[in-house]
Length: 175
Image (cartoon, rainbow, N blue to C red; front, side):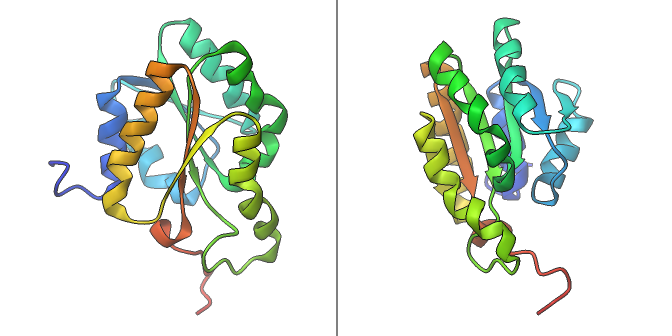
């Protein structure tokens, strides 16, 4: 499948492969499920399930020190679990690439998701992360590619927010 015909989730996977990502840290998330499955089935990537998102902050450092590139897949609510650890990349100047599915965003039906969803970009920026947001499928691949370049060539923490206009708001069967 070529980038022109691939679904945006497949484009993310192909982009990660193109950047030689070897380790994929994640907490199970429906928004990332197709990407997680592709990473689990890959012969070149190791998908590592976590008990909490903050474990990925140290994992990415370990991967980098071991000569490998990594990515963290999480939901916006997981960013709140990482606040203390997010500054690690800025302090130690190592790359941290995060792909974050958003909640508490466009069309959110669960009010308890709104606080962290609205705070996510501000929290990431306050801890020194560069933040990009994506609303449209055609912007996913170039944004993930640019974020990976900035992270791995510039030793930066970079987050791509996959907004609810892109992934769809959860309805849990309600209209």
